[in-house]
Image (cartoon, rainbow, N blue to C red; front, side):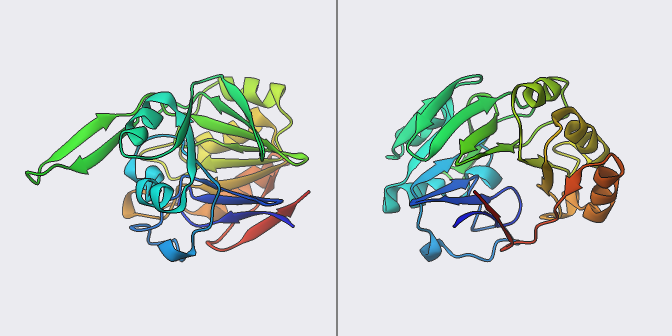
Length: 234
């Protein structure tokens, strides 16, 4: 059975036939994620941008479990330098993978990896533009916005794609808040809206039930997923 599984923050697992795809696999350090590193059985990672709470455990897992990483070309170049197999893309580009078609969309945010050097100092590596992801898989179209502000081209994304599931950040502070995410859902006209990137840390704590009420007030379906919850699809 095909499934979408939520693992907290922005970490989404998608199972389709013999393939398993992780989007933004933030595991260690994610207080909402219940799975452990040893649990991971995956074919592909898709990364929306380079921030540590989205790249997560990508490097160690991709090397240990021979997972190919899909993402922006600068981010993929950095990961290649760490011994990871990648497929670099850019905004507006699409590619047919064995599991389905991936297209990277605009996202208004920032993107860099923070790491500690040999001197114990923190350094930052620029990882290209942030992105959203449109995934055509099976009979469904899934949109993962990544981390983003509200922008008017979301309306264009909705006009050009019949989106079945839209994963939108609502946590505010670093991304859209609730009201902006409601407007994004209105722009996109998605069949089902699922909030992500909230309540993981103090700075992004919001009332997800308020979001659900506001989404339903504009005639849309909203599903609040707790870590471990899944949705089945064809």
